[in-house]
Image (cartoon, rainbow, N blue to C red; front, side, top):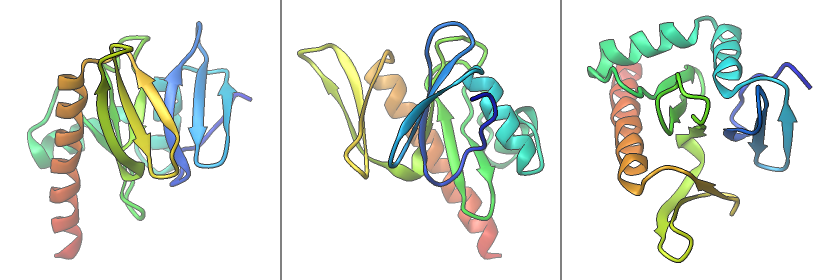
Length: 150
Protein backbone atom coordinates (compact mmCIF):
# COMPACT_ATOMS: atom_id res chain seq x y z
CA UNK A 1 0.00 0.00 0.00
CA UNK A 2 1.30 3.44 -0.89
CA UNK A 3 -1.43 5.96 -0.03
CA UNK A 4 -2.91 6.50 3.41
CA UNK A 5 -4.86 9.28 5.11
CA UNK A 6 -4.72 9.65 8.87
CA UNK A 7 -8.05 9.33 10.67
CA UNK A 8 -9.26 9.16 14.27
CA UNK A 9 -8.48 5.41 14.07
CA UNK A 10 -4.75 6.11 13.56
CA UNK A 11 -2.62 5.63 16.68
CA UNK A 12 0.95 5.87 15.38
CA UNK A 13 3.11 6.04 12.28
CA UNK A 14 6.52 4.46 12.81
CA UNK A 15 9.48 4.29 10.41
CA UNK A 16 10.54 0.79 9.37
CA UNK A 17 13.37 0.24 6.94
CA UNK A 18 14.08 2.56 4.06
CA UNK A 19 11.08 4.64 2.93
CA UNK A 20 8.50 2.47 4.70
CA UNK A 21 6.23 3.04 7.66
CA UNK A 22 4.24 0.90 10.03
CA UNK A 23 0.80 2.39 10.57
CA UNK A 24 -0.90 1.30 13.77
CA UNK A 25 -4.65 1.76 13.92
CA UNK A 26 -7.09 0.85 16.70
CA UNK A 27 -7.92 -2.53 15.16
CA UNK A 28 -4.95 -3.37 12.91
CA UNK A 29 -1.50 -2.43 11.69
CA UNK A 30 0.10 -2.53 8.26
CA UNK A 31 3.06 -1.33 6.21
CA UNK A 32 2.91 1.68 3.88
CA UNK A 33 5.54 2.26 1.19
CA UNK A 34 6.23 5.84 2.26
CA UNK A 35 8.07 7.62 5.07
CA UNK A 36 6.15 8.85 8.13
CA UNK A 37 6.80 12.46 7.06
CA UNK A 38 5.41 11.78 3.59
CA UNK A 39 2.28 10.17 5.09
CA UNK A 40 1.87 13.14 7.44
CA UNK A 41 2.22 15.63 4.59
CA UNK A 42 -0.22 13.69 2.37
CA UNK A 43 -2.75 13.60 5.21
CA UNK A 44 -2.35 17.32 5.89
CA UNK A 45 -2.89 18.01 2.19
CA UNK A 46 -5.94 15.72 2.14
CA UNK A 47 -7.44 17.90 4.87
CA UNK A 48 -6.51 21.15 3.13
CA UNK A 49 -2.98 22.20 4.13
CA UNK A 50 0.58 20.83 4.20
CA UNK A 51 2.82 19.68 7.01
CA UNK A 52 4.69 23.00 6.75
CA UNK A 53 1.42 24.93 6.87
CA UNK A 54 0.30 23.00 9.95
CA UNK A 55 3.65 23.59 11.64
CA UNK A 56 3.37 27.32 10.93
CA UNK A 57 -0.17 27.26 12.35
CA UNK A 58 1.10 25.62 15.54
CA UNK A 59 3.83 28.25 15.80
CA UNK A 60 1.31 31.07 15.34
CA UNK A 61 -1.05 29.64 17.99
CA UNK A 62 1.51 28.52 20.59
CA UNK A 63 4.96 29.85 19.74
CA UNK A 64 6.21 26.23 19.43
CA UNK A 65 8.59 25.96 16.49
CA UNK A 66 10.81 22.93 17.15
CA UNK A 67 9.33 19.42 16.91
CA UNK A 68 5.93 21.07 16.73
CA UNK A 69 2.76 19.02 17.20
CA UNK A 70 0.19 19.60 14.48
CA UNK A 71 -3.57 19.52 14.01
CA UNK A 72 -4.09 17.17 11.07
CA UNK A 73 -7.81 17.70 10.83
CA UNK A 74 -9.76 20.46 12.57
CA UNK A 75 -13.21 18.86 12.75
CA UNK A 76 -12.09 15.97 14.97
CA UNK A 77 -9.13 17.90 16.48
CA UNK A 78 -6.71 15.19 15.32
CA UNK A 79 -3.41 16.17 16.92
CA UNK A 80 -0.19 14.30 16.14
CA UNK A 81 3.29 14.94 17.45
CA UNK A 82 6.77 13.89 16.32
CA UNK A 83 9.08 11.91 18.60
CA UNK A 84 12.15 13.66 17.16
CA UNK A 85 12.89 16.23 14.49
CA UNK A 86 10.61 15.45 11.51
CA UNK A 87 13.67 15.85 9.28
CA UNK A 88 15.15 12.66 10.74
CA UNK A 89 14.29 9.27 9.27
CA UNK A 90 13.84 7.81 12.79
CA UNK A 91 10.97 10.22 13.56
CA UNK A 92 7.68 8.60 14.53
CA UNK A 93 4.35 10.40 14.78
CA UNK A 94 1.84 9.64 17.53
CA UNK A 95 -1.80 10.53 18.03
CA UNK A 96 -2.31 12.59 21.18
CA UNK A 97 -6.05 11.86 21.11
CA UNK A 98 -5.60 8.12 21.64
CA UNK A 99 -2.91 7.96 24.36
CA UNK A 100 -3.97 6.41 27.64
CA UNK A 101 -0.62 6.59 29.46
CA UNK A 102 3.12 6.50 28.94
CA UNK A 103 6.10 5.50 31.05
CA UNK A 104 9.75 4.53 31.02
CA UNK A 105 10.51 0.79 31.17
CA UNK A 106 13.71 0.60 33.21
CA UNK A 107 14.25 -3.10 32.46
CA UNK A 108 14.18 -2.63 28.69
CA UNK A 109 15.47 0.95 28.77
CA UNK A 110 12.76 2.27 26.49
CA UNK A 111 9.88 4.72 26.59
CA UNK A 112 6.48 3.08 26.21
CA UNK A 113 3.21 4.61 25.05
CA UNK A 114 -0.01 2.75 25.85
CA UNK A 115 -3.01 3.69 23.74
CA UNK A 116 -6.63 3.57 24.93
CA UNK A 117 -7.19 0.20 23.26
CA UNK A 118 -4.24 -1.36 25.12
CA UNK A 119 -1.77 -1.31 22.22
CA UNK A 120 1.77 -0.58 23.45
CA UNK A 121 4.48 1.06 21.37
CA UNK A 122 8.14 1.08 22.40
CA UNK A 123 9.97 4.22 21.32
CA UNK A 124 13.62 4.96 20.80
CA UNK A 125 13.06 8.33 22.50
CA UNK A 126 14.01 9.47 25.97
CA UNK A 127 11.19 9.76 28.46
CA UNK A 128 11.95 13.48 28.94
CA UNK A 129 11.58 14.17 25.23
CA UNK A 130 8.39 12.10 25.03
CA UNK A 131 6.92 13.90 28.04
CA UNK A 132 7.85 17.29 26.58
CA UNK A 133 6.26 16.42 23.24
CA UNK A 134 3.04 15.37 24.96
CA UNK A 135 3.01 18.59 27.00
CA UNK A 136 3.50 20.64 23.82
CA UNK A 137 0.63 18.73 22.23
CA UNK A 138 -1.68 19.41 25.17
CA UNK A 139 -0.77 23.10 24.93
CA UNK A 140 -1.76 23.09 21.25
CA UNK A 141 -4.95 21.20 22.09
CA UNK A 142 -5.87 23.75 24.77
CA UNK A 143 -5.29 26.77 22.53
CA UNK A 144 -7.09 25.09 19.63
CA UNK A 145 -10.12 24.20 21.79
CA UNK A 146 -10.37 27.75 23.15
CA UNK A 147 -10.37 29.14 19.60
CA UNK A 148 -13.08 26.68 18.55
CA UNK A 149 -15.31 27.92 21.39
CA UNK A 150 -15.20 31.52 20.18
